[in-house]
Image (cartoon, rainbow, N blue to C red; front, side, top):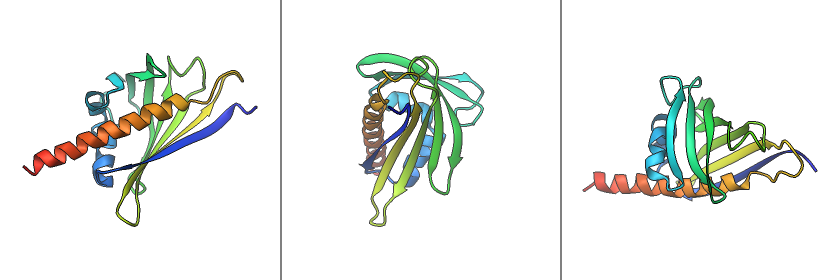
Length: 158
């Protein structure tokens, strides 16, 4: 059985790619206020939420339990609207080496927008399952954030 792997999910969203990418690169700290499974987030190290040398501390529900981890940004590609994060510490370290989380905001030819999450992982032991709980968490987060963006757009046009 392999200790390394990659899992991903892709979800359609209603908000535009530019609005999604803006939230993820400029307003990530707001996610804790709109995503029901995220209970808190704070800057753990550094002065700015959106720089590569900053570390954030997240509290969230994973597999029915409240857990925490640390997160940092590895890279941001504005051209392809892709962000790579590293998740480590606490909830991650007892099962995996740091998780590599890639978020892609994809604009389809027909105008639809998709959010693709990919998690690359290395398990510490063979009895550890792939981190499927994170896909469920991110699916919930995507839906909550998208609903928030769409609602804010409606409010802005009133």
